[in-house]
Length: 245
Image (cartoon, rainbow, N blue to C red; front, side):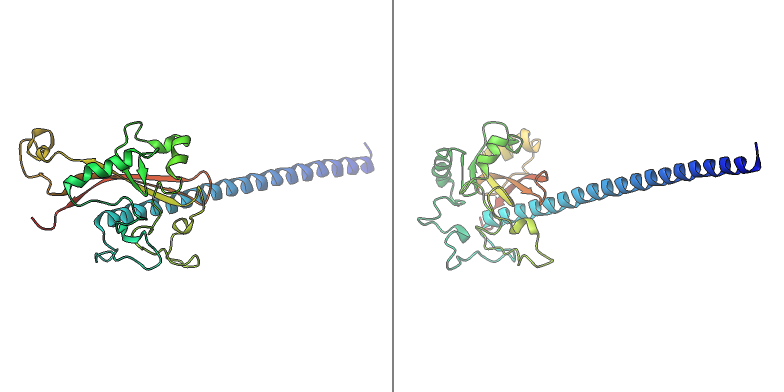
């Protein structure tokens, strides 16, 4: 092979090597960008769930204040002018509220069980079907309907701040249909003799409940994130104690 032809062959091999290196570099760059996008997606989903979980926690606290009839600072809830439902003052707007006497529990449950969902304005009769209603899209859609669940601050007057406030949870500000957060409080009559049975206290009276009235409440809070696929659920029980004998 002449020196001239040998030089051309070397240049051809060099060109192939350069092309291969460029393609490898492009593949590495593409892999890096896809990895970054995937990591960003994971972080974004996790952040959205944490935001929804915090909103659900706030809903649980708001429900407890609703049951107690208090504000966040522990003071008695006072009706707000222009907001007839705040503090659940019995009137034409508030047809159900958290009763104080045992004799009123039956009437409250009768009103609730007459509702298609068993709930009215965030207060519910004890569920008799599947307890995880949030896993049934049809049931959940009915439960988040108007006048079924309760929104944050709707019955306590609690404020979520402005939409531009860094301290407010954006989910609690969302009140459009199907978005935001809700809570439901099931009213479950409690047997006053259960505190003296081995089923609850192992023969001891130490855990006997001093309830007002003899009712245990089960609170379910659901918050939907800013992404359609994000949903956080918290469920807890609450017993309102008597402050005086």
